[in-house]
Image (cartoon, rainbow, N blue to C red; front, side):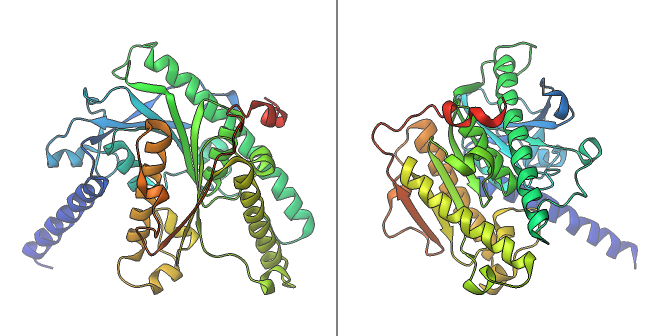
Length: 370
């Protein structure tokens, strides 16, 4: 290959990198750039090595600054924006094995609109869990053990979420001194997560009333949240892949137990919505992988043609922003009540919050051992 060809390929790679970074910010379509900084917060001993990062609104800067980011479109240790403070705070937890951030575009979209987002991931070297199967459906015994393991893990990480809120309160108060003093509005705190992280978000809201709203991106629910539901405003985003009768009765234990858990989780969610109110957003033609942005699109999304996965992610971002705007900023968001829905791919069902519904769920989640 000639030197000219090598230089041309390098230039094209640079353009693609910058385009990807610019695209992440452009899709966010908000007035703020995205800054990011690692935080040192006091965490429970079992998870003291968790990687906690703050993604925050920053003043817009030159497009070339994308080169300095730890992720496309994010600027490392950029000065926080002066306008718009204090910013509502959102915590984010990822899917299994919880070692990477799986919704970077969604996080960037929220930050660009004036939210501070804190991500919590668990390095595999510290936890030793990356190689451990999340759910083992091979037999009745392994299935029961998997449910017990998931219940314990989701309780542990929900307690981590509360510890992060405690640390953010100290950070916002200026102890220790930091550029984020008086920037975080913890009276308007929410939480969201993808897959297993969605279960953590639900459990954290169930046990800690400081979380005023929660979003679950296609995660099964476990522990007390799975049993009792979430009393705060709650959005569950789901693909449309409910199990068939054949799967529920399959002779293959892997297929049967996975289908049973999905069906039971769906039925519990409907009962919880009837009890507490909330929103169920079902995305037509989506697969579980389409609700994250760090992996390949699902086969079903590919069959819908074109830029289907990106379109689904944009739809999710639009609804998640509208949900948090309504419940953390008290902004009028007609999208959540729009009939017919704006997007043919989306079906939103809303349940009203019952009169006298308790806002403090502490009495329902006290059994998690905390």
